[in-house]
Image (cartoon, rainbow, N blue to C red):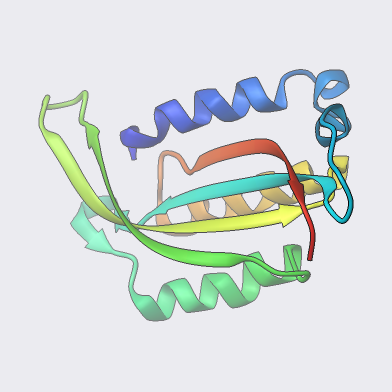
Length: 141
């Protein structure tokens, strides 16, 4: 999952220190009916250790038992294909990816939920990383 290192760096910059992370979305100006919110992208690679693939059934279970309970207001799952430079052997590795997009109000608990979901995926599917991108946006639903 080394291809996601850039996303993790971006997330660390977006998250910053706890004081900087707080109310990040409030720093932008939105015009009615839009409100300041966060757009969160999570990149879940589907190649597990030993070249096993996270199956559709396993993904559906993870979605139902981890993602949905932590983000019950809604999310979008997009199919993707990622690639990254494998530092171990220098090869370009490619894999199927699930990209989850969440648009939500900015709150400390959102960051805690992201961390919980990321940790669960890494643990359950023996992943080294999950990409996280967080951006302040103007949105309405």
